[in-house]
Image 1 (cartoon, rainbow, N blue to C red):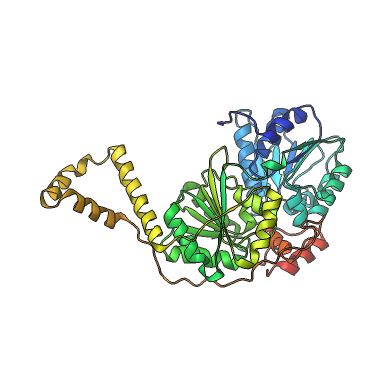
Image 2: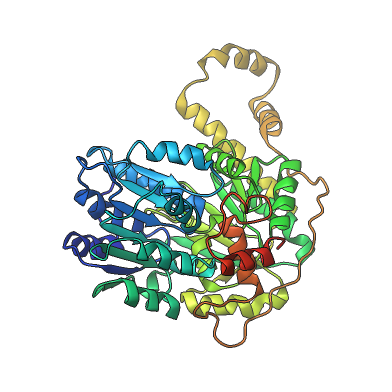
Length: 472
């Protein structure tokens, strides 16, 4: 699979898991957690048995799909199969897939409880349980579902819990359902990857979109993710980018699951090179090759910032993360720097001329690549005829003008949103959260007005929670 050495979380977790010990792993997204629990879990699977032997709980549909894909790659040679189970997909289709006897199920909590109540998934013989992104499942109101699921699994099991942070409610959950767990922590200095160049621009709200376009023209990212704070913001920025000729699509919790899957596939395949997203894409999406992350809006909390920029700078590669702040959000920026122990450098807003120069450099690089590939021999005779009529400098200048995509200044209207207010007091609670966190949770879970009935809640408390926020 191309793994050459273990990451810190893998080196700490795998030996303990192979010794049948319960493990609490404290690590951020992108640190190799799936292999950390996947390798020992698959090592222990008995392919001669026909029942579900292991379950992985994940907070979002996207993460469930990603984890299942990774487990299938790891388990391919052994014949181990993992099935993703999540809301927004036909439950009939899932029941049919379950009849093919997968050894592993990767599920969002609400849909897993649906199957438990229908008795289409039986957990009586499960011997391995993983809670992935436990703090995120807490934020999304899944804690009661998790407890219900764990009560339905035999006591004689191995449990692995992974969480970027360790709020009190998660610690209580671990104490209640885990047996003498060993803790593996990544160092705080690893909160952000050293290979990521982090900087910020102090920009007025109405000027953000033009700044984004100029940076895209100058930097010419191979794959870029633009993060917006709200669903409306994502829709407007994505449409604005397409209006100006960029290959971009938006993704957020109000989109049907099929559309979200389509956008992610287009981004992975390189059909589009810019994905505009709410924090639904900040956790769990393992998309290789992302070179640039743009925080169109600064995130509410430092943990979200870490997860956002962690989409780039993966597997030892370099990445670039740009954050746009308004003047009133400077204190918020300082809070993120303090928590992440990284100072972001302020950069000057580039001019239109610099954007134009960036596009010219991009064209020059394309020409040089074409020359190196030596696939232009069929055009030599036409080139020689042109050189008979024009001097080389004039001819190349005309070619550059023809090929260069000049910066588009088509008017685009992006609705202003209020700047973030710096939090006072502790910035993280055990199980609570302010208005912004509830809104963000609703978006990540995908339980919005359009798909709430498909991925139904398993408890009145979470139904009330989602109803309150479905229009956020």
